[in-house]
Length: 119
Image (cartoon, rainbow, N blue to C red; front, side, top):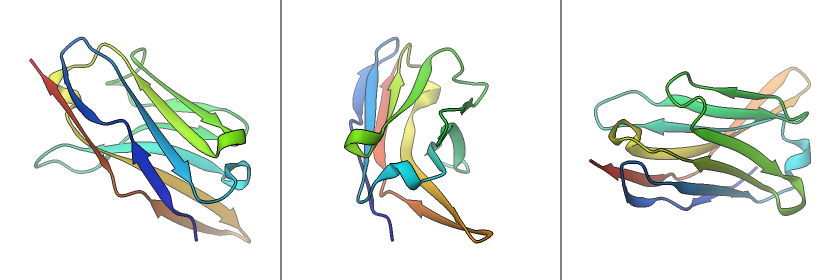
């Protein structure tokens, strides 16, 4: 069982920045994929960014070039630096961890942190 706790959300004006952090209850060096997803009001949850154990990253087209995901194995943390924020970035941001073991994928989610961008 992996517990994930997000922090760093808040209310900022368009063009501003936020840095989200997600701390895991265990070493993240064994977690295959760590990611950030978001859910805007009335919309489905969507992938924002993900990073593998080897450091490979994947970003949604809508945020490419503005957001950067990183993992800090020493502190069991995955971060999401968000710059040039837009009102469409508003939503609840969730941290996700995928562990692969014996051909089984176990997925864990954090409780989410609210990000609100004012125009």
